[in-house]
Image (cartoon, rainbow, N blue to C red; front, side, top):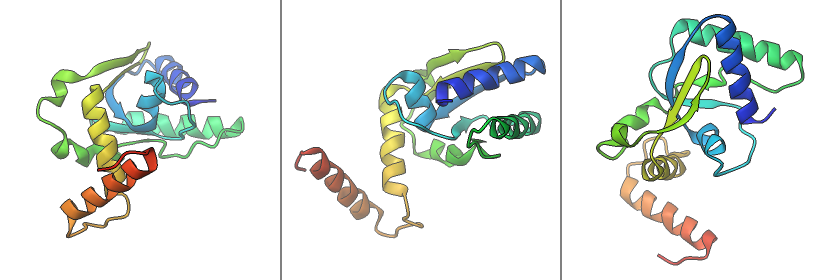
Length: 154
């Protein structure tokens, strides 16, 4: 199953248990649901809210059942990994959210296009830095490298 199919199946899973979860997601799942990319992603990055215990438990049960059918879904596929990003988003990001899915049990929204781009650029620069003390220089170097790979000069 691709990301969209996994999300729809999880929506059905939660609906059968009469649970509802309203969430802001980012990352590959959001980009796939928006139709921007068509690549495999095996997790769903939840920005807000903190995933309730009951939903986290159901996500693990869902993952175990998916693995029984040959899927490679980890127990932590639904995660709050990027939640610390909130402090780095442009002011007013909450006002620019866009709808992704209004299912039976899941209501998914994501960042507006510019905010989503900022989150992806932050993630690119943040990979493997471990609190890089030269953050501005590191960001410029990372963006310069990206521009070069895309055929642009900074």
